[in-house]
Amino acid sequence: MLPWPVDRGLSRLFPGWWWRNTFNALDEVTMSIPAGSAVGIVGPNGAGKTTLLRVISRVTAPTRGTVALSGRVGALIDVVIGFHPELTGRENVFLLGAMHGIGRRAMTERIDGILEFAEIGEQADTPVKRYSAGMSGRLGFATMTALDAETLLVDEVLAVGDAQFQRKCVGWLEEYRAEGGTLLFVSHNLGLVRNMTERVIWLDHGKILDDGTPGEVLAKYARTAEHRDDRVPTRQKGQVLRQVRDRGLHRWGAGGARIEEVHVDQSPGFPGGAEVSINYQTAQVDRAVFCVGFLDDTGREIGAASSPPLDLRRDGGALRCSIRPPQLREGIYFPVVAILSSEGVILDRWRLDRALVIDRDGESGMAETFGPVEMQAEWSEAGEG
Image (cartoon, rainbow, N blue to C red; front, side, top):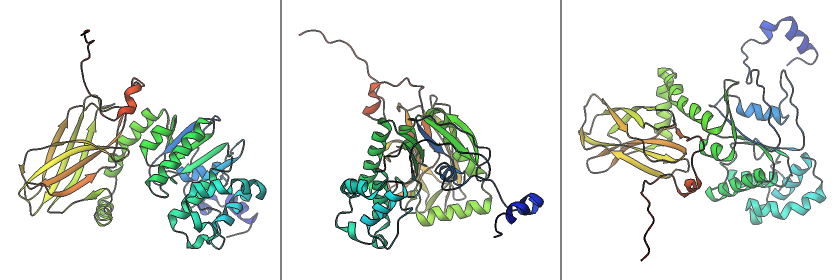
């Protein structure tokens, strides 16, 4: 709260007092991103991903170090940043364009395309304060698509709008990449990161832990999700479980039996399958069926292995499921573990955040686009008849 240069002087005279109770959101982060490349940035919450984009876009000044950029930069760190709630959607488009150095005449030529992309129709002349969160997000993204930015910074903004609008956003980003734009993409959706980038940087506690190809880095990062959960203190684990139960995050069921803990041991690349360990608790159910399956990164169910009806222990128990390597193509898959009653009622279904990444070092061929499952078959040339 002290004015400059008094604050600078005190920080040098009493560094221990001045910097107490502080931490570095980014710590000695150094990287070089060539023009025209697509780079993904992954890491747990609090790793410094958004701070990194803010520093690159010059929204936040670094405490130490420098950032060198060339060309116009479009930052989709927050799709509604720069919007004035009292102005209409149309007026905010001109305002955001002016903030990026594009005059009113140039924006007038682009306004129709922006409003069409945003799908806000007659609400274009309504004050933004009356927009829903989805409408504001769509307008913000649509405006950014018209700014002719050589470098685009994207931070988890593809959650705006419905599924159809999200597909439109992904399609536009793919065209942007194909036309030579530079893309920095932050997302917890590992499937999107893998499909849209050619290089991935892994941040954790403000440091770069890994930097390489998507297959290599995402496989390492996905395997740490389970270990991060193991380091959570017991009291905090209880809070997390209550949030999962109360909010229904990736989990639901009729109750009566509960999955308490799941561990997945995966061999590198998943060539030898996986070992899934399940701990459960029950107070009302005597017999149940356990299932272990997979979802792909779009949420499609790939398949599941089911146990025969098993007698459950009232004080809780543990099971182990050994999965032979399914014929899955390259991709990112999320394990799903469920307990079903003898009548087929789902008592507890849990989609884990710990992903399995299958990468075959570029050995996949043209058939990769035909689905997630690789079917084994023998082929022979038919005789003339």
